[in-house]
Image (cartoon, rainbow over all chains, first blue to last red; front, top):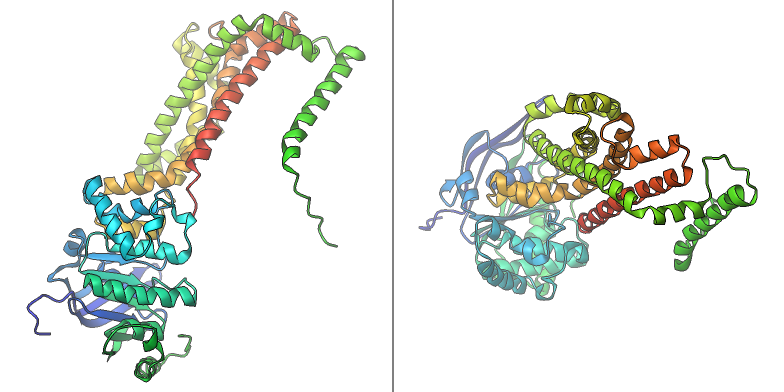
Length: 266
Length: 259
């Protein structure tokens, strides 16, 4: 990358060791990764490969025990306080006592924006994720897929240049999942945010990403990075194109080359 | 054998059934007291109790106010102290470690038993002893429930708040407190009944000559069964009022607490 912009994520030799009552567990060892501004990168690998840990380090929800980690040229902690990233998890994590509007506006409220500014931004966001009609509903009145769209809108509230997603579609049915994948590529293109996306679904990683980072466990490390570079729009036709299947196979082989005994990926 | 599933009652039956039980109960009571005339002297029939309640309403109401006020002050102060202490305990392990054995000790003390001591401490003409007893009784369920509620925040919510750069005050205001709110109202519902019972029973142990409990004791001793029972009805009304208000609060608070 020779771009003048600082990389969205720049990890150099990042280690993470958890110290528990049963001794030390190395979750990540010597991770080097660079995600360019506006780039869509998926992290894929079996359980325990540290993909979620890496995401949580980037989000400053955990602290690395070695190496350096920069988000837009800042420390992870500074980037978190500056709201440089938005984050969504497998669970939507909406506050049940708040309406959709107040859930999406939460990050803005925490940063002291007044009600009118918030309302304008929430209107933009609900339009972006297609939930205009549901702003005054409570989360328990929404389906799982709709709740997840609210969570994505909330992650985008403070116009972050980086979106972190930890298996956001993992708990959804296949139809909803494919629909939201298409939605996400559109949203990422519209907002021009870089995305780091954790998943254990190979087709999902290939469909969404510019690059797929393949990881393996014990200790968690990056074993391969596959350039997807599928030209053009991410639409339903892509899911049936030969180029797409070729990349899916490439990622699968990269995964299985890493001594995975349980090929339980989709 | 297949277990027999009780059939759901139709809507009308849900209201009629308890009323029917009440009517049957009253009928048996009347039968025992008025028709058979076999009841002990201190058990009058329900009609004369009701007549007494209406005839003496002004003095009963005055005593209800005294007992009700004692219970209310105890409930409010006891709950406020419990909430403050629970908030401290949730934030600091040291406070939690100090409070836990104290609360456990308090929970096994029969609180009304210390009333005579309190009465002597604060003077026989002061209502303070009774209010203190009600407050102590209300303190425990509120403290236990609020402390539990303050620890119910979900990991994903904490992550969202941390990722949004929320300050610890904001996290308390927008996450920890709303999560604990249904637990607080459950604690208040339990405490409201306890406060009324404690304030009333505390009156049996001396203190000023006002209040429902004092009146029940006085009229029972002097053999005025109708009036004693009318005062018991007054006590039931206080307890019911506290319970209904607290239940309403609880229902409002837990409407959106799941999902």
